[in-house]
Length: 68
Image 1 (cartoon, rainbow, N blue to C red):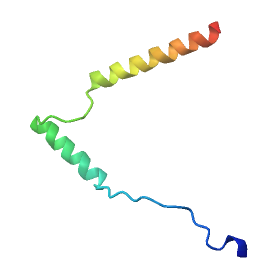
Image 2 (image 1 turned 180 degrees about the vertical axis):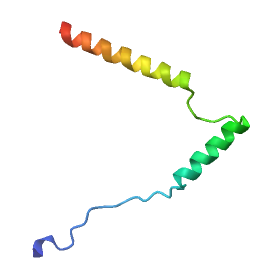
Image 3 (image 1 turned 90 degrees about the horizontal axis):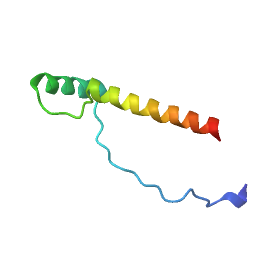
């Protein structure tokens, strides 16, 4: 055990992140949506489009595996 004396894990970096309470963030986003303010919330149409694209990619990958 004496041979491990002075061993370290190296330098560590700490980042100062601003943390917010999730429910507060959700309420603020809802308020902004009601007021008509622009936001980064995905619409149902955008979400559906993304799901369709992912399904198409998965289907194509399945076909490629079968033909290989």
